[in-house]
Amino acid sequence: MEEVKDDKTCKGFVDRLTLGIIRVLENLPGVLDVRFVEKPPAEKRCLLSWEQKNNCALPEDLRDFYHTTDGFMLAWNTKLENEVVPVGCMMISNVAQLRPLIQSNVYSLPNAPTLADLDFDDDLEESDGPEKPHFDSRSRIFELDPCNGNGKVCLVYKNCTSGVMAQQCEVWFLDRSLFWHYLTPSFTAYYRLMITHLGLPEWQYNFTPYGPSPQAKQWAALYQPLTFHGDSHSDAAGEPLLNKLDPAKAFRGKAKPPTPKKKQAAQVPASGGSTAKSQGVSGRHSVTKR
Image (cartoon, rainbow, N blue to C red; front, side, top):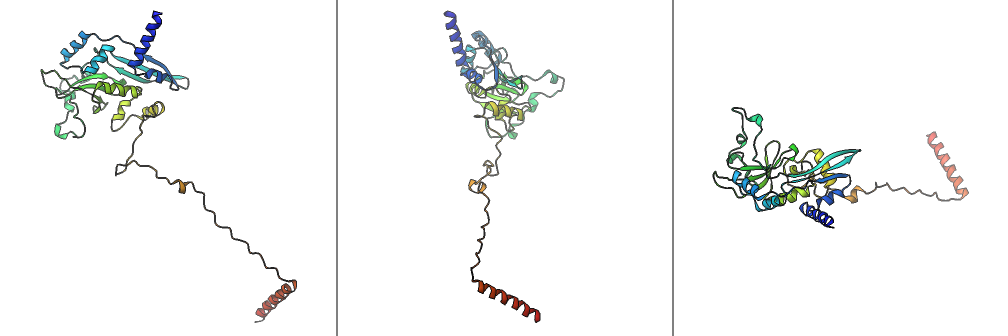
């Protein structure tokens, strides 16, 4: 009996942690192998050590998350023509993997360009939207999700000062071309966003000007039709370009020309008819003689 209760308690915990998304995925057509990796909670000393090492205070919602589970991993596959294809993946790094964003060892040569060289002056940056992170000491950036090599979801502390513990953070997406795209103001908002998008491939690119790849759009249209938005083409006035169709004109049958009514010949007496014929013949003869 105790094992049954423990099993129900564990399922209830997983269901609350994943916001019920496992049951949703299992009911989708073609979805196979929904795998959720249960992890123990992180120890308090590990969280305190991370804050002291990186001189950043973890936000309260992320701290509560790590007190519940040290990281997050949920993946699922689908079946296409008798072949199992991995599709969805939701991942949040554990405390040990929540490391600062560093560049590859390939660029560690002398006089090689660094990430800080990619920062533009403030005068050249666009004023619309939140201030973008910097690769230099003005921002402290930590990797939340490697996105299977399609970019990086990062926990970003901006306007940092040397020797002062950073307090406020946001969640940003760094694409493969090293451009920043704002996602959410808090970890909780990002967590809900990740669950809503089912961990589909390149879902973070929905928040970029160019969007995901055509293949990723097909997966989104198949498994997430309610929240999937295709390319929005707009005219000069900012309104979407739609085919303005008038059903009354488009589906109206082709107008047929009126059928002329046949004139009925008047009935005349037989004698009258013979007289008319004789007059016609005599008339033709008279014209010939002239």
